[in-house]
Amino acid sequence: MKLYIINGPNLNMLGIREPEKYGNKNYETLCKAIDEYCTSLGVEAVFYQSNHEGDLVDKIQEAYFKGADGIVINPGAYTHTSIALLDAVLSVKLPCVEVHISKVEEREDFRQVSFIRRACVATITGKGFDGYLEACDILIGGKRESQN
Ligand code: DQA
Image 1 (spheres, rainbow, N blue to C red):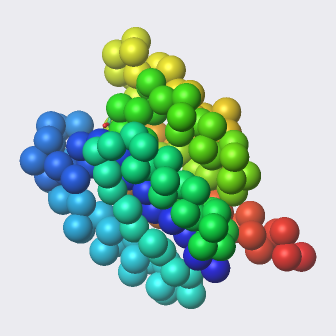
Image 2: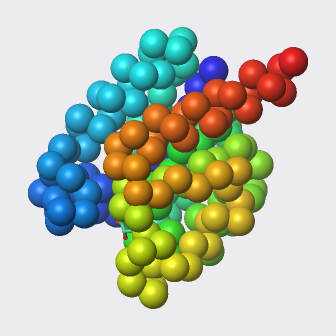
């Protein structure tokens, strides 16, 4: 099983950006935690981070063409603006889980919109880095169920 772990703009700044909201640990630490978790479950994790919307679209399409089983995505601020990312997930029809480190539902009004959400099988917010592991669990569980 192979999962794509896609992070959008400014998530490369984890550990530096607003630590009171996103914590003190950096992006490399996040990827290491996910990689160790997936490896322990026999799952391959492919990591990607970009600050550019079109590059994120390309990576979602790549997930499809390279035979991924699912996508974990934190689209960052593109969550609240991007129909292109929504369309990309709808195009590939891969199970996708939306993750936010912070509890977006308790933040500003403009963060209450998520275009990508309607294309996702689940949304996890406010669980910090653990939210990504939970997202992997959902996709792994879904794949097992579809095999039974
Ligand atoms: C975020 C929440 C978004 O509103 C914000 O723009 C981010 C990070 C989160 O992980 O909590 O960049 O997706």
